[in-house]
Length: 79
Length: 457
Image (tube, rainbow over all chains, first blue to last red; front, top):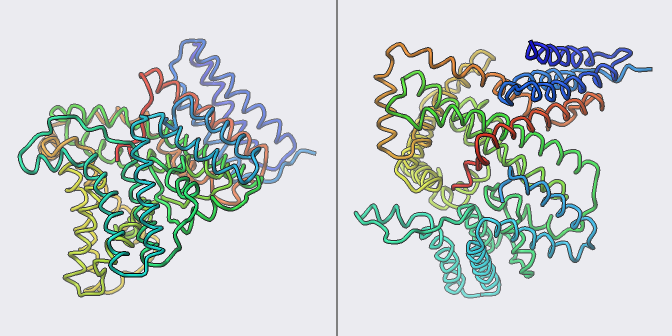
């Protein structure tokens, strides 16, 4: 159950990173929350006994989403 | 000192601070001291060899520059070449040459890290002075720094005098662009090495470490993955080297340009280990006559270059065979160009050519990775006979797909004009660093650092 929670956190981070790709209000907030999701996901995963090998693919997933945001995102839409 | 050792970031930070706080006239002292410290960290004795090669090449080049008689110039050139190549032959190939005549060495010879790289770099300097392309460097300190500049000392790129030496001499100021580009290069390099190459190594080492039990599909996969592993390992190193140099205001040459996107083996060698290909072209292929003395002579020259290239990579017949196969590919391509029409373009055709080139280049990696000809033979035998329904082993590769899929993205990190949003860039950096941190944890948990593959050459 704990591992499911951790994976949900990473998935949420990936979704937030993707949401942050588009020029819209709250873009910066989305990206900040995505970063928090990565950090908390790694910490929680290690605390719950997940191995780094198990965490790595999820971190890479968020990295890929963040990269997509950087590559194709517009200018910061926050007002 | 390894780039992926915990002490390297501390070392780099200290060098960065010292470099930019010292006045220009003292910077070469700090950089030279740091470079010798970096090299001496491996083994102090190897540092004396580096100093010896540096001194010999500097003195000979100075003499060549001052000498007027052709005999004296040739004699000094021969002395420099004999000294540098002699060191390389002794420390790297003594065992191999002994085995050729059925003998074994009675003592163990330490192989100094990076000897293949700095001897080639010093040879290029002496030859360029002899050819009067450049003047000899009068300042020993700057020349020694050129040979031993720590980012590129142990695994290249093999720099040319006219590209690197003026940069080392020039007075530089810290620019935001250098910090930014240097940072991205370091991120890309560590990502490729720690997150991709070292993960692939686990699977590859497992298969190649038990060749007699490996199945055909496993050998195919492991060989293909080794091709990706060595690319990420070596290009990752080159990125770290370029990133570290860029933080000091120095631009090292690009050593890889997406080689697996090549549409022919000839194009592959223009994109893979560019500095070594250029070195062999300028100092072996062209002096032998290149393509100027007829088709037969050209094919012989190509074969000589690739046999030497294979031998440069390692003192073993499996490396020579690797080079030989690539030589055959180049010869076939040359003959094809001369006898056939120009191939039509088009996206589909280009993709098929890329796949074909990737497969052609992947096959000889089997010999490169094998520890001996006997092991290579065993792997080949298993490759053709071990297809007895062990496809379940392929499932072991699935966890590796994510790092591999991240490779094209990691490479685009340093493309110009990438970042449009600073916050998105920061997020990418954060996630990239986290991925590297997790991968480093995995590596340390496995017991120690994985050395860069090209440190052996």
